Length: 232
Image (cartoon, rainbow, N blue to C red):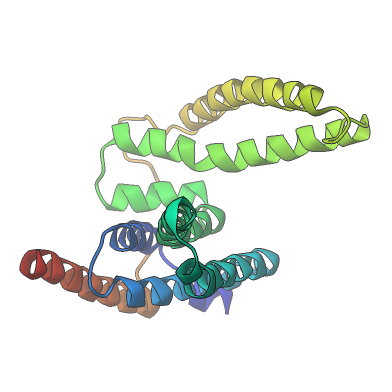
């Protein structure tokens, strides 16, 4: 099942760009697209076995829908403006973040580099993106380690608020700088900046599922440009 549902990194990148762009932009079919693409992005979490995160995202989505249809109509003034802005912005960017998380979690760096090389992108783009690709997961892991260290020392939120900020923020900033340097050295050690063509053990090719998703994205882009050109 994992092999069947595994998408090509190029398809994942195209999905991230498509969903983020279509939902942030306005259009007559935006509400329908928002629901469909949100459900699709949440389904992607199940393919990488993120059950708990899937449940949390579904709860957040349902809460936002309840606020939109059952709370927002009964508010007015500044409260209505704040709720409308929060719900609108969050529900439009929420699926894009989910698909971005799916792309980062389910794609290896070697697979990503191979996909970028197949797209004939220059090394000036591949190297920084490959470093960033591992940067955020490493920072998240480092933050969890700092959090565990603070709990072991009894420094928690209610009693040591200012110390909590100091003991977590400063080590995290120092770790960000060090991790960035380490990842850059690792990329250079693997020969990513070599002028010669690199070999790779990853064998990437489009499967039937990738082709179907690409066709659907082309249709969505066609509808998007049609609305932009003829309705505006």
